Structures are given as structure tokens and as C-alpha cells.
Length: 268
Ligand SMILES: C=C(O[C@@H]1C=C(C(=O)O)C=C[C@H]1O)C(=O)O
Image (cartoon, rainbow, N blue to C red; front, side, top):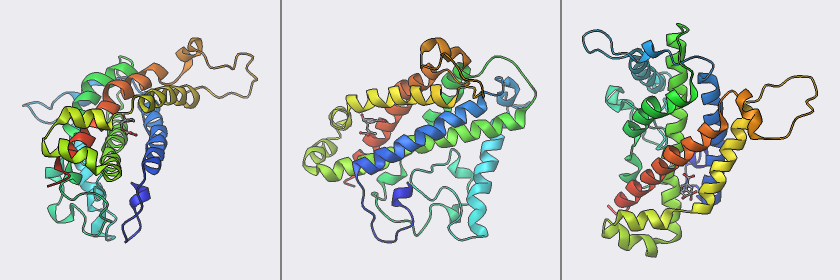
């Protein structure tokens, strides 16, 4: 998280600062989906190559992750996947001596910071989300489609893995509440402790509003009909309801899974 970056001493973490980072991340999620939605589904990008080989999208993500991590060869610490919230989908393909980084500020617990739910994110994105916000069809732009999928996956993954910082702050604010449940490996109690329903409701409403705002067609003509309403949603580049569903059913539950998994390792 940038709030934790660039400082050699232990940076100050607060729930407000981490939540601000999550709010900013919403913009990136909405824009990434808007960009991907310019193309139809393009199913060929997801079909395994003949003989059980990798699909184009899997090939692209593996190669792109390896390339981004290798930036460290030219500029020390420039490579990706050095921050705890920047988690690769195919860590086994990254050059091992570059990953993870050596000198990042250690605000998180070293073992707990390795939590990844990227396998669940991968399945959710391709099986559930993609059919909801892309139309059936094929425009032949498969490499472009794969690059846009990669952008969506990266930003959704980063948002969800910022949950590690959320968990750390919540633990530091109330170790006396969290420690017994961690010691008892009591996932349900941890989930109850870290859940704030009122915050979740606001997140859902805000991402829906962002999709409605960022996804409108901007023209120079004055519109007599400018108020936000559901009737206008058909003209949006991504259906705002898809954004609230994405957050409600997958992004927030997976963020909380990251929080629980982080906390379970917090006293190791
Ligand atoms: C991230 C937090 O933890 C939980 C998950 C939320 C989310 O993913 O947006 C929101 C509220 C909490 O239930 C938080 O408290 O801000």
C-alpha cells in the first residue's frame, strides 16, 4: 500500500488511512471493468490450446507477471510483486531470487503477509464476473482482451489483499479481543469481530455510484435529464448493479477471508 511505502521506519497505520486506500482502489476497479467491457467476451482467449495447453489469457498473465517482476534486473526494487498487496497469480513462474523483496517496510507480520486468495479470484473473475459485464460475441482482439483481463485481475487482487493491512490495524487496535480467537483458531469469531456491516453498505452504494458516474457518455449538449436514476443505467459502459454485486458477493467476502487468514497467522 502506498501509505506504507517509501519510508524506511515503520510507517503509521490507521484504519482511516487504509480505508482511504480502498476507496481510491474502487476508481481503478471501475475503470478497468469499463475498459474490458469495450470488447465482447472473446471466448477464444480462454480456450485451452490443443492438447490441453494453456489458454491465451493464462499464457499472457504468466508471461506478463514474469516480465513485471524482472524489472528489478535493471533497477533494484523496481520489480512488481514486492509489496504484500501485490500478489502474483503464478508465483511459481517468477524468478525466485527477485521475489519477495528484501527491503520493504515491515508493517505486516512476515508470515501472515504471504496470504493469497488469488486462486479464488481467478475462478470468480472468469466463471462469474466476466459473463456479467461483457456481451456475447467475438471481435478477434484476443491479445488486447487478455491484457485488459490482466489489468482487471491485478486491480481486484490488490484491493482484496489490502485486507492484510486492514487486519493488522484491527489487531493492533484490539489485541485483547482478537488474540483469544486467534489462539482458538476460531474463524467465525474473527469474522464477526472484523465485520462492519454499515461500512459494507456504504461501499456497495459508492461503487455503484462510481460506475454510474465514470461510465456515462460525456457530450457537450446540456442534458435535461441529468439526475442519477436507474433508467439511465442502460447507457452506462458497465452496469452499475454489476459493481455493487461484484463487491457484495466477491470483493468484500474475499477481503474478509484475507483478513481472517492473516489473523490466523498473526501470532505465529
Ligand atoms: C475492509 C474492512 O473490513 C471489512 C470488509 C470491508 C470491505 O471489504 O470493504 C468493509 C467492512 C468490513 O466488514 C473495513 O473494516 O474497512
